[in-house]
Image (cartoon, rainbow, N blue to C red; front, side, top):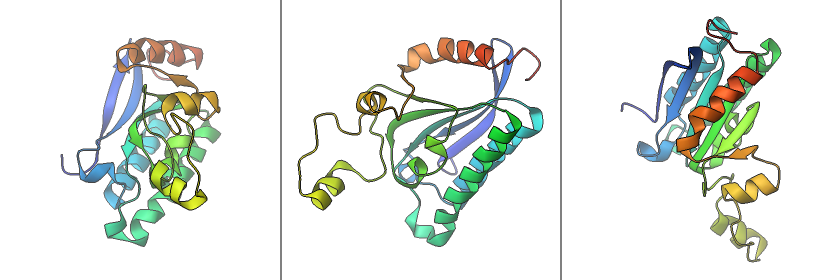
Length: 181
């Protein structure tokens, strides 16, 4: 990989989708200028082709080595989600372990449907930072996918082996057919 995300197109039961797949193995999945641009272009490709967008997010946050340029990606990607929404193009986000920081604070929590993988850590700041700030212990499972589901931040917790079938149903429910929306 040359950065923390790869993008492309695919189909699920002949229904076209545009994909972005983040990788934590590249600099902790941090979102810098390239990642932000590729996520943005993925959403614009969905807008242009009227195809649903699926993003698998995993990240430690914004890439601090790039300073303000990485932080600008939060606004850029969040504005792209609004463009998809205005056009009625579905955005599905899958939160993988971990999804934290600036990625969570931007596009990762703005999907039409938000899925999470079982046990995934999902939040802005990590549990140790929060405990240190509030000087209290956090509840068991705090910021894990199941906790986020119970609190309404996630729509479904789904193991990867069941995601294709769920996406098939979600795409059909959103009116997607074999030739685009």
